[in-house]
Image (tube, rainbow, N blue to C red; front, top):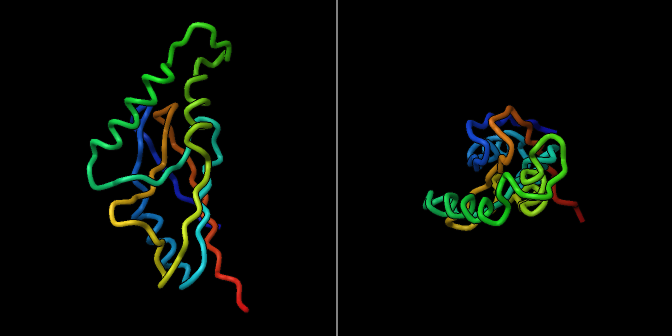
Length: 135
């Protein structure tokens, strides 16, 4: 297993981790297989989306904040970060990506984002890089 440290600077932030993941996959020596990226935090997540236009990330974060504002009447969680838990649940805590020719297979405009919803913090992203089963 590989561990990436992700340091976030804002309460709600997407950090493009695509290049870091590519490096780990290349260093693994696995030519064909799969990558499982897992976020072991309850107020953060991971997603695959467009990384060519930064406005996409802006719009996703804006929509999530409008849907689930930080301060919501009725939230009872004592830490005051219920919105972060909900956003993390909506986004999800893992992604699986095919590995081919020693690289993650992503679409032309796709990137892998660590999604922070309760920052700024120092977080972990766990990577399992697995070879394809042999026949």
